[in-house]
Length: 270
Ligand code: AMP
Image 1 (cartoon, helix red, strand yellow):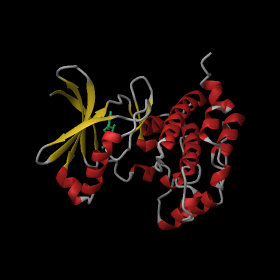
Image 2: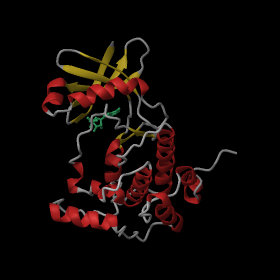
Image 3: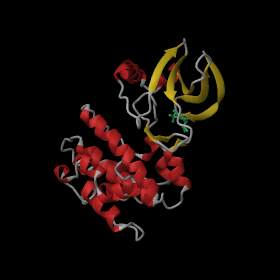
Image 4: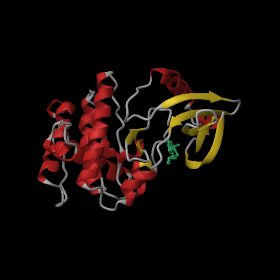
């Protein structure tokens, strides 16, 4: 069925290869997941469910497609849309000090559109963060973690910034939550795009004490802006989520798309 290309990477559950279909010469990323690994990690049931649900999986230009899957005795093969630039997280790490405002605003526009689409389908994402985003060769962002990407709970951040930042106050306070958790995460993501670091965590070892301190900063919405953030960018971060402890006060996503900072770099078509 496929001509095998080189390996694209290795995750917790197996390797990902670039492949090309023999007939249509269509390039895909083929993720090979070892069944034994899933069983040993108690993830079998969740991947079964997620693959079953894949027929209903969201189709949006900024959500990574799962085209199909097959399996043999020992492995599951997931046919994924190819994202040639790989993980956005790595690009952010390489950018030392964050992306430019132009690049950040382009990504924010793309991901906000994708999250709006999910909300319109009554799906709350709940796990927006750079590790769950891939980039295509032409620099289009793709949300890539709908279970079929089988991302491990990320250890990658330990040396970098905390993922705790992406968990909003209402989840820490165990108050129950709504789709506005995603608005919070978008604000955190925008901050991280622009600075290379998440707003609340400090790049220290995530021991229990520092986790608690980070959670306190989140609940108190205690953070500061680096000097290079523009006035408009700060305005959007505050309105979109960060300074809004109350989920109801977080800016609606359709309004995020019309915010002057987004429009400056993503002008509306004439
Ligand atoms: P994962 O198991 O999802 O963490 O993937 C392991 C590595 O494979 C990642 O670091 C990515 O760089 C790469 N990868 C995963 N999915 C894709 C894809 N759809 N397109 C291109 N590269 C991918």
